[in-house]
Image 1 (spheres, rainbow, N blue to C red):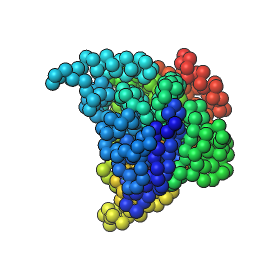
Image 2 (cartoon, helix red, strand yellow):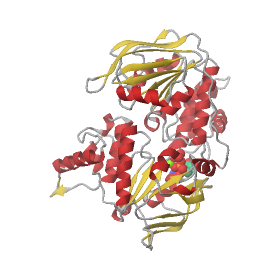
Image 3 (tube, rainbow, N blue to C red):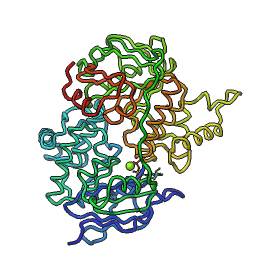
Image 4 (spheres, rainbow, N blue to C red):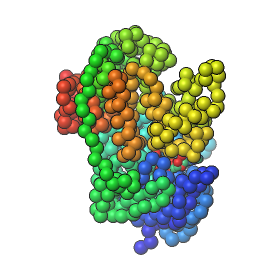
Length: 501
Ligand SMILES: Nc1ncnc2c1ncn2[C@@H]1O[C@H](COP(=O)(O)OP(=O)(O)OP(=O)(O)O)[C@@H](O)[C@H]1O
Ligand SMILES: [Mg+2]
């Protein structure tokens, strides 16, 4: 039988840089095919060619043995190709249901059948275990909820080739489990699924075959049972020693960040943070773990000045910053790596250099107090090198960076600042194996230089490997604390699920 999809000898260049370099990809009906590679390897670019978002410079796309021109996403959908995008393509001012049906609305005469759309979204949401409220405006949603909408939007279409570009990055473990069952079910019914992911354990559980890209070139295509995770890591990085080192415990000094009985409300008036107290000392990494949606995101917003404080206090290096603006909190000595990096962490239409320099104006100013392009460029180039931000040049627009490289750009700006307190939410989300190790190492280095680090994450492993103290959050409260030792993953996993004090 013909594989339904063949991409042959695909080339895509951006300026002088070849993002996809003569790549072949064959996807069979009924299989989940993992597409792996480092940040910037060309995974999204290759799939964007398939979905008609960009046109390849060379190569052929064949469906059932026939060459097709995929000139637009609309054309892709008509050909039966659907895609869940890494950077969500949602319209913030529209509702969930309107986004799901955008461009494919059901009409009754000139009127959109709104009630029918809402019912369909409710049905899909229940069927796939992805909770959304069809009437909510996308603008008001957390990144996790936006991810669920983005997935439902692809699943609502009638497709036979489904591309998933890091679809589970912001789902909870339970949602991910359920979603993978749904995806396996799709494959079993004959769909061809392409899954992009940086999580090898996830890939191993769900994929039948894998293709690895490195710097735009295909370096391997195998059945998953023919390769070990160590083989895959070596293929992805081009480097075969990857033992994670164990991190020594830190030596805490005086308190740098103090949160006392903090209370915060959601837009709907619910107590999302319900009396949280915590301290982070210099020389200490405090991890906050919890299943997404238990107040961690809001806690970070409350600390960093992004959410109104209803009760309690926050102080940074002895300065009371309760209710202060983000700028005031920063001025007190805190840097923040936000969870919603693309929305909040960067300006897409600015260059990479300007995005880095904006947080580092003091260093970009000369002794004459003038900002010069050259100094900004120099600073950016140095930081891009140190954080391995791969872009065609410092002048490249930030929105054109690969997902992981955009992330590294925000990290480069924030982690290179001199501040006593670092608050980071999901700092390694979307990063490849090497970049993840690098960021963890940076946080530990910062701690050892006397920094106070608050690490909020949904990755149990990340927290249990580097935190000196671990707090578990559930329903807006701290329900467990582990200090003086690193808890096991099973232990914290249980506390996260049980959620009682
Ligand atoms: N529109 C564009 N203009 C210029 N360069 C681009 C554009 N889109 C992508 N690139 C570059 O192409 C390369 C491949 O990017 P791509 O997004 O395909 O990587 P990726 O494998 O999906 O990485 P990640 O895991 O970080 O998402 C990157 O170096 C990126 O900067
Ligand atoms: Mg990508």
